[in-house]
Length: 172
Image (cartoon, rainbow, N blue to C red; front, side, top):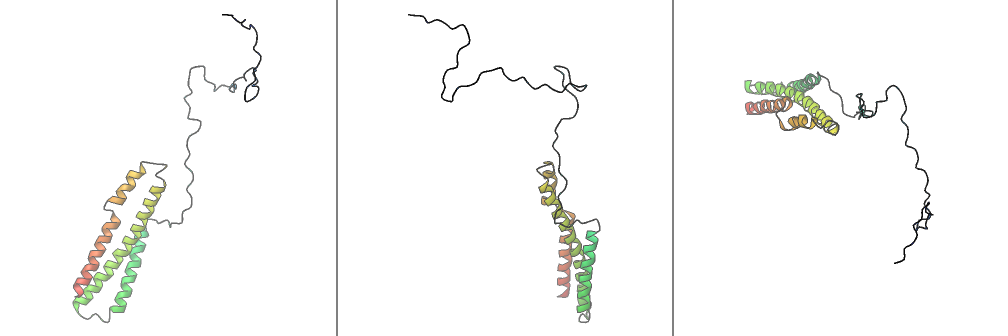
């Protein structure tokens, strides 16, 4: 078997399908800025993470912001609707049962107005929780209670439905 001589110097570049590949000195790794904050080799800095995820500012949403007086305002609107009904039907109601039905109707409409404002606020909370669930996954559990549980708005709605049922029952 003939043995070929082994080259002892740099090998000339051979032709490749992509063309000659330049071989040179690899680029120097980037040097970190030397300063007083540079940690020695092997030590890790204890400062905050360089890039923390930021929560953006709230985007204006077309929903109306309701304050703590919203249920009171809803109840006032319901009472005004009840009083309008009483003024319209007051002259017709002569017996005690008919007047009692008008009282129940006024109270029931007032409760229904307050329940409507509370339900609107509950819907706003659920929508905001669903919108921010991607940022804060723990909020999903908090909004699940609103969706599944008996909230004050739903309790007031049930009570107003019962009072309106009483108004209809008494008038018969």
